Image (cartoon, rainbow, N blue to C red):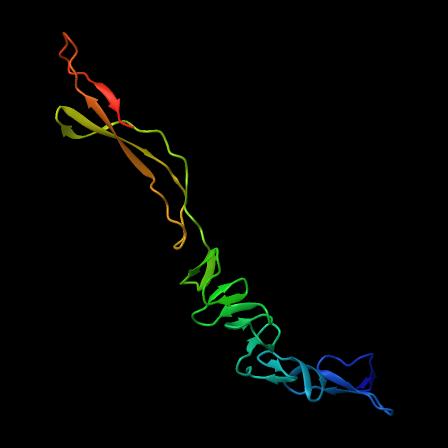
Length: 198
C-alpha cells in the first residue's frame, strides 16, 4: 500500500485501502468517519457522531439510543433510554424502575420501588432480638385495698424494614403485678406480699 510515496503494510487510521493490478493506494475516509471500510461505509465515528448502518449521524433514528462510549446507535432493551449494549441499560424511560441493567414497570419479587431514585431496591423485613428480663413493678393506681402495679420488658429492633417490608412486631410488653396489703398479727407496719399475675 502506498500513501504519499511511502509503502505500508496497512493503511493508517482514517484511511481505507484500494487495490488494483497497477497500484494499491490509501484513501482518506469521509470527514465524519474516524475509520472506514470504504468511501461509503464507516466503521467508527468521531466524537459527537453515532454510527448507524455504516454512516456517522448527528443523532440516532427513532427507537435507537446513542451510545457515547462506542459512538454508535444501539437497539436498547424495551423501556430503556440509554444503554451500553443491546442487553444492558444504564437509564430507563420515565415511569420505569431500573434493576440490574433492565427496566421494569413493577419491581420483581424480593425488590421494591424507590420512587426518588426510580430503582428497584432489595426488600428488607424487620428483625427483632430476644425479649429482655421483666423490669420492676411500677404503681399504676389503686383499687379496693389493692395497689396495682405493672412491669414491662422490651426487645431491640435489630433491622428496620424498608417501606414495603414486613413491619416490626411489638417491642414492649406489659403485665400486671399486684401487691396486697396484709397486716401480720401483732404488726401494723403495712408491709405487703408481692403477687405477680402471669
